[in-house]
Structures are given as C-alpha cells and as structure tokens.
Length: 79
Image (tube, rainbow, N blue to C red):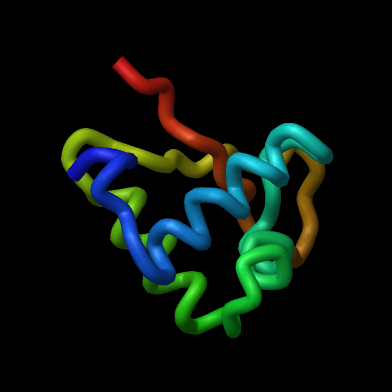
C-alpha cells in the first residue's frame, strides 16, 4: 500500500497523524480521532490497517510518561 493510494478514513487518519506531528509531536489515538472527525473505533481500525500495511505507513511510539492515553503514533519513514 502506498500513501498515494489511501482514501476515506485511512487517508483522514494519515493526514491527522501528519498534522499532529507538525503541531504537537506524535499524537495519541484520541487526538487523531478528533482531528480526523472520526469516532475512536473507526480511528482505531484505520490505525491498525496503517500499522500493518506493507510497506508500513504508521508506527507506534511508546509514551515516555506513563498515562492512560495509550501509545502515540507517527508516520513511518518513507523510502
């Protein structure tokens, strides 16, 4: 899967992560959902698709401070 081929919710989540990285660093799932205009379940499903795409489009970043917000996500480096 290529970034250029993304559409619908996957594209919205990708854009949300990219915008979040620029503004605040790697965003949490809740931040991605808010920015993408999706509920958490749909956002989570899109994140999972992007995490497991080939080549990988997103990757999970462990949060350096323990909290209940879960991991952060950022764009995988593009080759």
